[in-house]
Image (cartoon, rainbow, N blue to C red; front, side, top):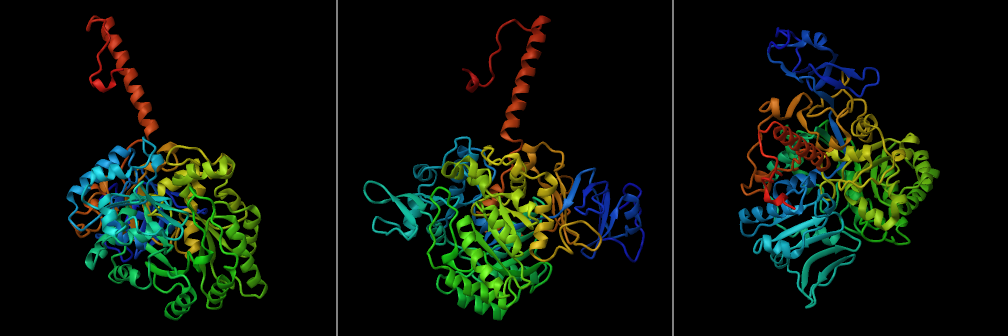
Length: 623
């Protein structure tokens, strides 16, 4: 492909892919910037300029002209429920990025009309009422009006779900249905469920209700997962750590990604965790898994990373900030210690869901007891997830025990609720990211998608940098924010360290994986408020072009058509493009109005139009 003087020639060490004419940020401190790179056999072979990669252009080399665009290492979400998300992706109507409830309800109404009898319309995470212009949730009455006959289930964070009458009938909720432990079925004056479900504070009522909806079968699960991975590739994601989660059973629910990995059809590298699903059975499950698999089993595309994010259910707190912090049982440490001891003795690392410092302090006491016996951490990787209210003292203890952290932008979506309950002072430190970094802790970044936050990594990066929620509330002051380079490192190098792959992943350096993204906008210079709107125009994983858009459309691998044909994703897609941020749109609209009035005055002065007030074209703008 003779572009810019790069003439193909037959060479034994020809590159598979060359990126040229680029602004490459490598993440490598020894050479942070470059203009070109070459990839062969899945690894970066040359990082330099156009002249340095020219000798490696062969007849079969794909040469990509980046046209001066920014290129970054492939992003790595350090806490994403990618396996569960993939199994359900094509069944879900995504409100991620939708800016008004009116638009969201219109999408729901349209989808209900095309959804066949027996199927549901489900909106499962990735949005918050604060992102809507109306700043409110939909009501059951609005869902009934939009879909009188099709079951509708709308999940809002870890706080609540809204259902229409058809969905209540489908799951069998009546006035005689008891409230489950930790949850509430809201009822009207006649005692009948009104369509609202509340986590009080446990989200199990939300997830167990959603689990009653129809599931995909057979090849449709593979197709759904492949399209979800392509959607993640759309934003420059090339790796993710799957944090397991509720209703994700091993090995059953891992079969789809295992088959795709076997067939070379994964477009995202996945390191996964195993999560005991049944209270009271956790030690039996862990013991059984230890006999079946070992951490790092697999390959560079799919590998086991350890246990968690729960080890025992009794030790898990809940992150519903609309409710008070849950009080955990006073003796959960007994079984929890047995689980940690078992893992340490068999060389298993783990990650732990822990929202509150009260939980973290109790867990640390168990770790310190085992450390005194020489059993912890025993060379195994371990980390805390979330940690919104972790204290400085606990961070010191984590560092002393060789732990790490993984933070997510849950506060982007729940920051207003957290602030109302705990105050702006506590919100400013939720979580204390800078304090974590100052102690030398490895701090990976992610989203916790898909049931709360959106999977869009640029929304999470914006939160790390700006301290703002998706509703625009500034809750984190400058002293608890990070700069763009640090945030990107948390989304690349740190994630690789959490899976023990820091010597092959996270930077663009010879010998490392050929994982990168050519961005739509320059992450380092674009106005801060526009960071959430960045996408990847070209995503490369191991030298494979797995996503291509705009100038590069058609260069990526072909996917099978979305199935079923009535899928919301087939019609609406996934994350909704919102264009410019609302504030910036308003600014530009104001400028356009001002310029229009100046032009009218200029025409009046020259006698080209009468000197009368202009009439707005749209009567909606008449005051």
